[in-house]
Image (cartoon, helix red, strand yellow):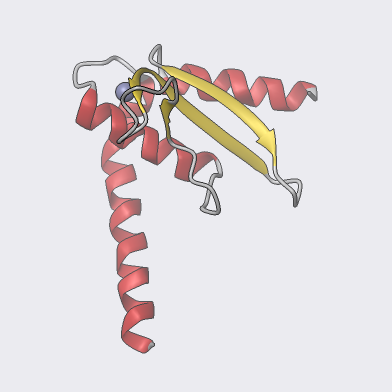
Length: 111
Ligand SMILES: [Zn+2]
């Protein structure tokens, strides 16, 4: 792992707070793929497995902002009162989610 990738990983982990495990992989196109998983929650519909809940979406946008936004929503919904620094950006994350949905709606209207 390059020094900058591990530095980014440390920074993302400190933003995501104590409940998160952050890993950065390199995607096929050399993009950084952020994988933020929860140390407490299991993957949905998979109660008996060891698979942790993860903000990673195969085939989706897994850049820093997209992954951190999904993680922030997870904290907000499941771990209220957690003191993760990223929760300070919840209003911005909600705004971005809103904009993404509007873009998707717009695309459907044109289709
Ligand atoms: Zn969780």
